[in-house]
Amino acid sequence: LTVKNGTIKTSGYGATVWGSNKTLILDSVNLTSTSDDNFGIFTNGETKANTITLLNNSSVTSESTGIYFPGDGKLTVENSNVTGAISAIEARAGVIDISGSSVLESTADEFKFENNNNGTTTTGAALAAVKYTVGNNLTVNISGGTFKGKKGLYVNDPNSDKDGIVTAAVSGGTFSNDVTEYLAEGYAAVHDEADGTWTVIPEDKNVAEVNGNKYKTLAEAVEAAETGDTV
Image (spheres, helix red, strand yellow):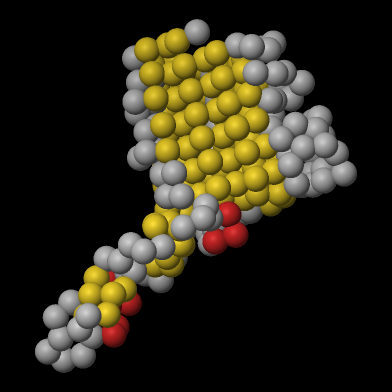
């Protein structure tokens, strides 16, 4: 199913993908769920090979978790936004790809994790990747986007005794917490002390130079500069 353009507003689930081998594409669609008990988009943890894709400035907004993706399959957010009062996205299996100018935001005023084998576990994360009990792999790929919340990215495997592994590879994006642990090879996370965020850039990318010395942030260059130096 492809939904293109327009607005969806509901007091229940915004969209529910039942069964396996199903596809949902939102292309330039604004979806809002005003319920604090229902997700913006929801799948079931026992399902297989479902695909959910947000494209072209689509948005999902929920008074609960924006997107809950517990089943095997693929979730893609490309140049689109997801906002949740609990978390923006909680994924528990499958492949999660976030790219472009996407913005994921949790508006919760605290971070909290509580293991739950029948639903969400995390409050306050832009993207929570927490493996489910079914035993599927969970893979997170982030090449761009802005991740706002008490934690921009939270990765956990509370069910490590079950089959399946959790992996994350971050090669771009700006986060509200340090994501150094999850960096793809050849990338670095640069801390902006002014706003507290961490931005992922190629390791060899520098943004400023003073007297032949290169710096990854303008703030570092300015601090190093002396009177008469050119930044």
